[in-house]
Length: 297
Image (tube, rainbow, N blue to C red; front, side, top):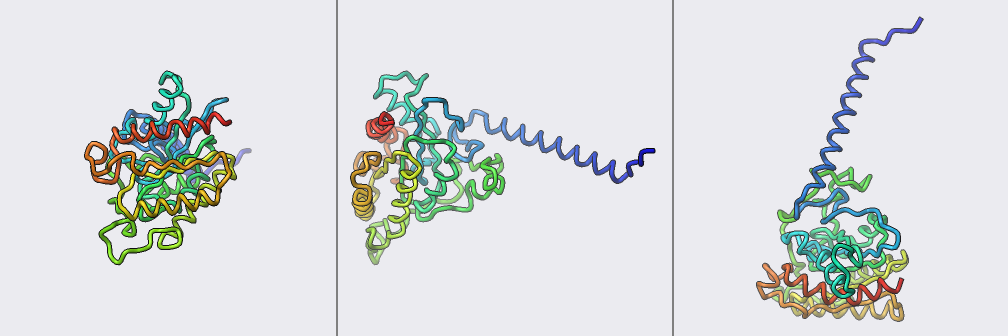
């Protein structure tokens, strides 16, 4: 004779089954919400643009790491650096946009600094980039708790629920240029790799070293200058990287410091972040060195 299941056991079973149904429904809703057509939304893997985790055989892929300058939160996704670079490479290679020369995934995050780039590359290693494009910016700090790392689900699984997915145009916190890059701050700090930016330079070096050890080619971009101190900082890190990675054909630096004037409202709405027109100019300048590295495969 079979023992009868107690009322509490039956109730618990129904409760668990109900919870499982609700959880499945929430997951399905979350996935559907991520797939909606929204030019500002963060995808289910925690970065802007369509999520393409799977890499087709023979596909070329570029991954962009950076902070607010690369994230470009107040510009619609199609006008940001990633899609602009795809179009520029297509034009250079004579490839129609329907069959792009290479895929570009921009995993940058607002307010991230150079100290976060190795962590980002490690977290997104499954994207299997052929080229890592380091588009560094002007952020004062890195690894902010407001972003994808605020989600325990993302930290443990790499999936970002929509409730934690910041909408890029709103921004999680006000942007602040690090004071050491501002010309109007006194006393003047030494903006070099032997001065106040020693840790920054070490982080940039670690990023290149990590990416090269993983077999990725690397392009480090000098972004448009925002001040005289920023120019000195970028000259210092360029010299440091050139010394450390001399003779490495899979490492390149591209100086775009003067390619656009950030004081021109056509190219920047706030003197720091770039507009659609500026991103097109920057992408055209980056297309050739990136294509050359991709074709070295």
